[in-house]
Length: 212
Image (cartoon, rainbow, N blue to C red; front, side, top):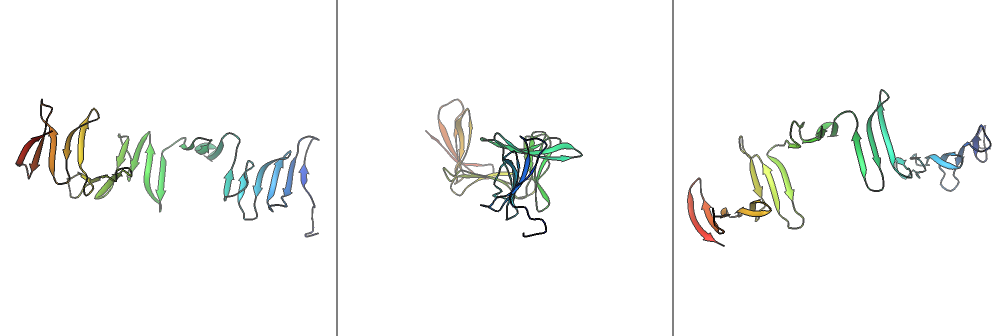
């Protein structure tokens, strides 16, 4: 024997001839397993990983279920947070309060009442972003174009494109105005299906021509 009590084989606990709990060491993996009438429910691997619901324990904690796996976190015996998934989706749910994401002990994002706040707590808008000079950037992998929102100085908020990108404005999925990277502006003329180019300085039209 290896120890004072050495059991060769499985240990079974039962109150009937058909149902039982058994404790066993898997000789092929070295894992300690707990099973219910032959179905594995819990395992601890030699690396210290834990598998629940038949999971192998390939990570520090693995959960498995035939339909969906749930991880519930309670406080005062009340469900507060639930993480679950099935074959098509993974869901993180806060059941009683806001959902907050932090890094380095600092709040970075908050979901509150269906509103999302990044860098701050959302109030009445679906999305609120709080930043410093550079607030947000949108980038297209397909066309390598970018749009930035920035506040370069006090009381100034701006939209900026990439080095050679144009900024367009439209209605009904149709472009109505374009600001090119060189500062010229093209737009539909009022009441006419034509466009005009305008080069602007500070509030003064320098040149204008029809095009299109």
